[in-house]
Structure formats: C-alpha cells, structure tokens
Image (cartoon, helix red, strand yellow):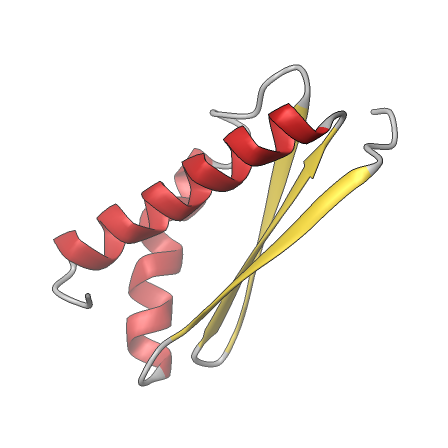
Length: 83
C-alpha cells in the first residue's frame, strides 16, 4: 500500500457510548468494500466519539471519500433513530 498524501479526520460525537457503538457497527462492514484505487478509510471509536479517517491520493478523491463516509454515517444515524 502506498502512502496517501491527503487526509481528513471526520469526528462524530454522540450523547452516549451505545449510540456511537450502533453507528460504528452499521458502517464498519463498509471498510475495504468501498475503498477505491485512490482512497481508503479507517474507523475508530473511543466511548461516545466515532472517528473516520479518509486517506486519498488527490484532493478530488479526498472530497469524494469524505462525502461517501459522511453519507454512510448519516444513513446509519437515521436508520438507528440517532439523528
């Protein structure tokens, strides 16, 4: 895997750890499945905070990756009655 020079950290904070855990469990299966040739992502949760790190080869890919992960988290929140 080559180093990707562009990175963004998306941080989502929830009212409690259980809500963050539900969102994490909903989006975790997407890791690796939606990575493209120019982007990849990692997911981490610490208590009630969920972090998605998007890494990309270029700024266009970074923007697309950020949009994708923000949408996935938003859908998980809506489906789980969190948002």
